[in-house]
Image: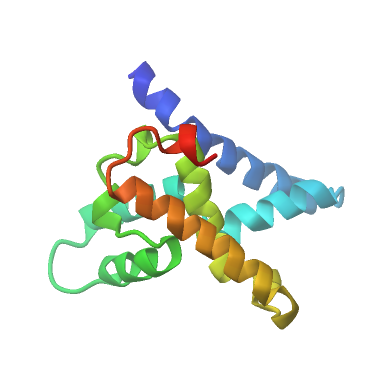
Length: 148
């Protein structure tokens, strides 16, 4: 039980950040730094949260095509890795790799990275993310000792 709680702590921390920013907004005490973090968590990559949402929704839809199938397709496009590849192991994946996966998805989807002025930086970031993800997919155990 304790092990599961520790594995899900980053997911819980993201949720708390979302709710803090929401409560600040309701109270009229908006904090720009917290709002920016909330927006990244809400609209950008959050692989732990997305895996958990797909897991839970998969239990509800057991017949025919569903939004889960659509989500799995978009998951792979955004994170650069299939849902099936990470579903059973995401909690044990190194935190640095989860960060890389989140950055890849955020860079593909957040508005600021879609601006033409940011194209060179976006392409460089995505190239680096794809390199790291590719090394991990090939099974390198010492990935972060060599790359980061």
